[in-house]
Length: 133
Image (cartoon, one colour):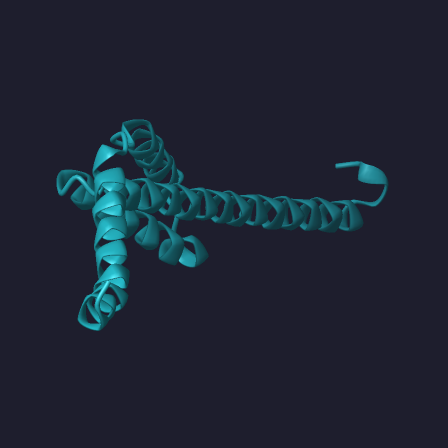
């Protein structure tokens, strides 16, 4: 091998290796299966959070879930299945957070309502000694 051939191989071998790796990764990403089940699960989680009327503290998580779901659907349309799967997982997690936050807020409202009702009953008992009308 001559000196010029050795320089050529030293310089081009890493480039050829990088190009081959890039082609392999591109082929692998194209060969991935469409994440239809993950998208469906994410859409169902977003719908459940919407049904729970996620407002207040839950609103940002619901907005993020909707955004990630839209991005996942867009990635699916562009056949970026790995990105779509990741975004669908993020959408589902954000929707589940929104749902849990909405349930927590509803439970707190229910507790406050029961506390107010208990306070009213206690007031009535104090006004009417012995519970007699």
